[in-house]
Image 1 (cartoon, helix red, strand yellow):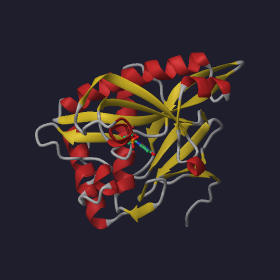
Image 2: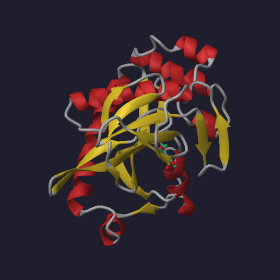
Image 3: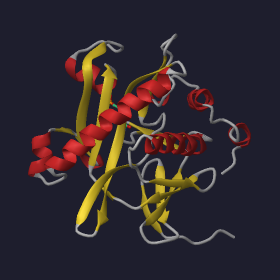
Image 4: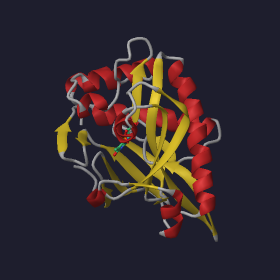
Length: 252
Ligand code: TMP
């Protein structure tokens, strides 16, 4: 019999359940994949297990260099215990190389290095298709304060620097990625910490030698081999141990 737990929120790739104690939640990684604001959908067997593991690894490593985040510990193949935060309704994208929407928007060639790392903000609203917004919009509409924007940008650049190095050491180029932040309240004060997930769903990862895509663009662009690529990322990071049976056997 499964335990009844209160579902707090269900997104496209994850579900949040009530946690065992106040201030905690359980984050469950689904196998569902969506793209283009959920116009394209599929179930990719094993994706949730891999992303749970990769996100655990990234958050743990980032915590080690002082980037505070919501991750507490992994509970099982698909679930992790996290700190409850008040999600800031922004997607923070960091780009090193032109790809995806910036290539289209600015007429850049995919693969062209950018003059420097660029941070962009998108307002999280599926009905609107997550429009790009500026700091002016963010402060005017009170989605985040100026200090919070500064904190998010500083953390995003640290995450970028650290992950560029981490991936480069295993022959992967970090093209771009998306992260989200949340507020944690301590008395009258609040602090911004990294939340959500970091996985091949939320990053562009290219093999440094062959430029082969090892991320969700394989799904977005119908390139096939999505799970194989995610598994390859996990394997290169050295976190494959308990995964192969899962992917072959479809453990849920
Ligand atoms: P973009 O080029 O489509 O704007 O995507 C930039 C980065 O953000 C890329 O690594 C994929 C990631 N991303 C998400 O994680 N979720 C999204 O909904 C979108 C549009 C992009």
